[in-house]
Image (tube, rainbow, N blue to C red; front, top):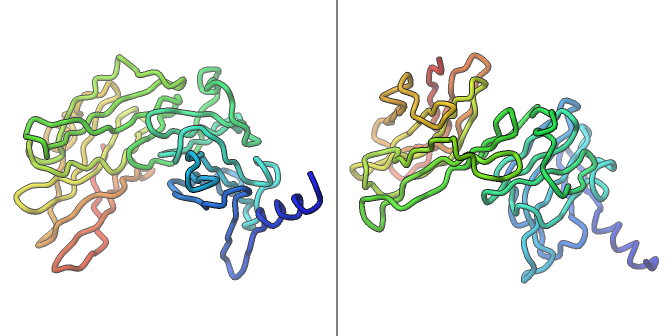
Length: 289
């Protein structure tokens, strides 16, 4: 590589830090980063960001991972000076850190594994060989379970006409194959046939139950919707009304954007509530036991 090309690459990787902010260019990505989708912080307070980008406007989308040290500088021990850009799973819906230092990333119903240095592995084997998930980030519509399985929320045609969409949860094994033992029912958050079913976020409880949050559209409005499933994919009859809870906000249309689990097992749903043309932050907490 000539000196001019090397200097150009260094400029491309240059990182600007000022007043608590960071800007990072990914080498070779003239078209820029097209999507930032998820982030996780490890036990050493390093920040791992997942997203996607393209090297040119007509190029294919690549999975992008960027890792920062606690002071905001790029981690020189990860990928190409702190960045990874490779054809893998597109923009990851979720990423998880493993006890052996590897990284799992899921997207579009597929899964990829990167080693601790950011290199893409040819097979997904860590959880099978004994590594466990440490921190993981849920983002609609995917969540990792502790054993490396991941649950994906997909949209399927409903029975209420062409505008009706239902939701089905599908569980994948660590290597990416569908888990045929998982009984993921087809469901609607609201009344059957209402348009706009929206599965926004998933969370996996330590006991194997799965919580999903979204929007229940009904009668010209919409409400918070939180459902819970047993580890085998069936509705949890001990939660709400046969596994479902719908929460209305006074004089507002609302929907869940993310569900998170508290250490005590309770469930927090956060989203938006629209009233009189104004968008407000909305939150609700549910007993998880």
